[in-house]
Length: 87
Image (cartoon, rainbow, N blue to C red; front, side, top):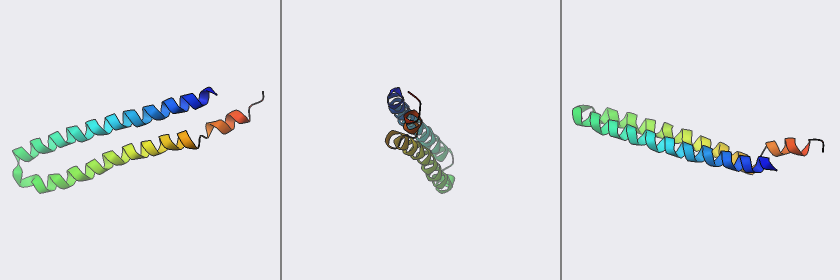
């Protein structure tokens, strides 16, 4: 039953690395937004709209990865293949 432990490890990696990537992406994007708003304050409204749109897309990618990881952890499709193997 090594598959169960590998699925748990893979789920942890998917969620952990996805969270790190989303945090870095939003942090870099926020820094660039502040930098560009300081350079051209008249474009602040347009930039803010685009920033929030991109923040939603970055978070959506992380949430989709978390959903897939939790799906593998709870309803593991690989266990059915192991049950059908000859012993």
